[in-house]
Image (cartoon, rainbow, N blue to C red):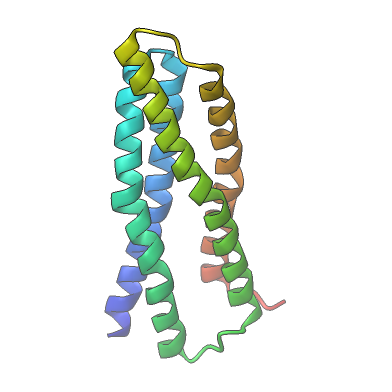
Length: 154
C-alpha cells in the first residue's frame, strides 16, 4: 500500500510540476509570436491542460500526501510539513487567478481573431500578471520538492 501511494504522490507531483512548466512555456512562446490565431489556439489548449492535468494533481497531492504522512507515522504538525502546507497554499493563491487569467486571455484572443482585430490592451496587462504570478508558484513547487526530500529540522 505504501509503495503504491508513494508512486501516486510522486507522479502527481511530477504532473503538477511538468504541466505547470509546460503550460508556462507554451503560453509564453505563443505570446511571443504576437500571432493572434496562435495565441487563441494555444490559450485554449493551455486552459484544457490546466483543468485535465493540473487540477487533477492538485486534488491527488494532498490526499496521497496525507496518506503517506499517516503510513509513515509523521505528525501533521512537523515543521517541514507545515512549511510544505504553507507553500501549497501560496501556490494555490497564485494558480487560481492564473487559471482565470488564462481563460480570459484565450477568450480575448479568440474574439480578436474572429473579428480580425488587434488584441486589446487588457490582454497585455493580464498577461503580465499571469507571468508574474507564475514565479512564486514555480518557486513554491521547487520548495515543496526540497522539503519532501530533505525533511529538514527547523
